[in-house]
Image (cartoon, rainbow, N blue to C red):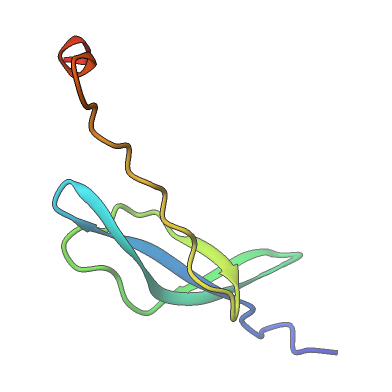
Length: 81
């Protein structure tokens, strides 16, 4: 039986660059058990931590970045402003 204190998840936080969000950075690890969630952060993104932390199973890649919405092009662009 595995040790109940083994950390099974990686903690990720998105670094903010200017007004947009940049890459996901590994900021720590944790585990989830019957007592709840235990999170250990050993670093934070510099210059833009918004408090959001996402856990993924250990060994899995960082979460996919959400695509940025493209700017409107053409005559319809004026109607949206």
